[in-house]
Image (cartoon, rainbow over all chains, first blue to last red; front, side):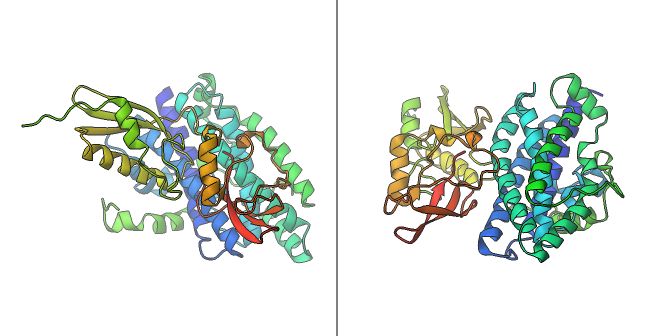
Length: 252
Length: 168
């Protein structure tokens, strides 16, 4: 695999994950449990949209062929998205959203730390900035999960149920293929096995503090590197892409 | 026909200092450290290099439009805006006088160095100085506020809420 092609694919993996999670978090707009949390979730969503845009722009320059950040974000079909499966999972209750946020922002935190040392200048610039943002996301969500886990019987039960449901999607986040192999050999992207280790350490720290136990791995679902998704992505895309599908080329 | 005189880099910078942050109009985009470089060629085409603040900050779109409009109105033949991703923008770049302007406007300026130094899970024991009364008897209400760069605080001395410009 050529390096440029691998970089393009790698951009989509990160950008798609951010875009889809941003779309999910935006669903909380005006539905947050309290005003501050409504603002927090939409702020996090905005950071993720911005991060996605940076990498879509980079991907578009590699692709050429009149591709733009918008055409990549809005004009592909389901099997052409490579977002990590956990990002498309439904928001559920507040506990599900916060546990998902801990699992995913801890992942971003370690991945971006590694990308700050990338041989690719764009990835380095992207990661240095994005890392500052996901640190806030991780701190915010882990403080909530600790509070919910150690809160009432109800909040504890719900948080544990959220972790039990989402844990099986975490294997997918660390899957590697020929894209990773090419970029690892060029010193552009990290070995996900290493990211997995540091991620496990961080989330174990949070869930231990929250008095939640990490479940056994059952019914593992993976496949995002190949564009295989759970049933939820199609529904997200039908809503997110509606305007561009109904009015092709419409601009703001 | 009168040919417009060539703009100098210095005069372009002076013009850019007139462009306020749309959300915090007391500080300019130059004071915020967003403008990283200016170049003018022989045809009066101006290239302005800017760096983004928060990845998703909606103000960036406004900055770009404002820069283009102001420079075209003041003699530039063409305006190109380039985005520099490195070095990463940081609140460490805000000067003491810029911080003072934020405080006078009612926003507590960033107090420590960039967020890299803050430990991950310390539930914030930090005490921020209230921009209204100057006391540090304050507490965090929310890590996220009305714009990506601010968090929400409450002062237990003067009983007023206030915004804090987060370290970045």
